[in-house]
Length: 121
Image 1: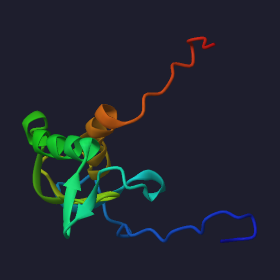
Image 2 (image 1 turned 45 degrees about the vertical axis):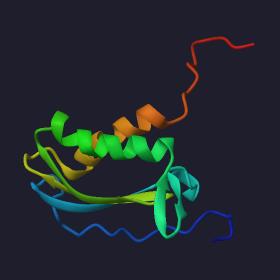
Image 3 (image 1 turned 180 degrees about the vertical axis):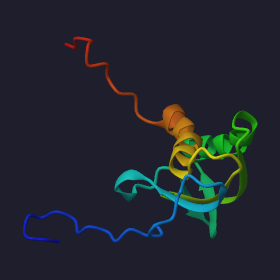
Image 4 (image 1 turned 90 degrees about the vertical axis):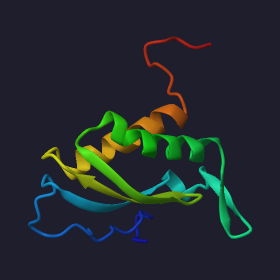
């Protein structure tokens, strides 16, 4: 940590000068905020998915049915992150594509935010 108690900056793992809007296969890792074990737990050396882990699994399989521009290959769900291979078959961009595939699971299982326009208490 630096003197301001901020976390150190991570080195980017992106390839320099690579156009991530290209079609291709991408290995992605998506981590849970604060490294919380929100997707399940390890029991007898296997993952036991909880409600949120099951949502992630359902959305991974659902992804191809609703997104014609992706092929979703192998994936693994861990208690606090997922790994997967996403093949983009149209020029929609890797970042945008991953956000769309994973955003649905976040929407279904994530905490509900209060509407700022609604008065409470």
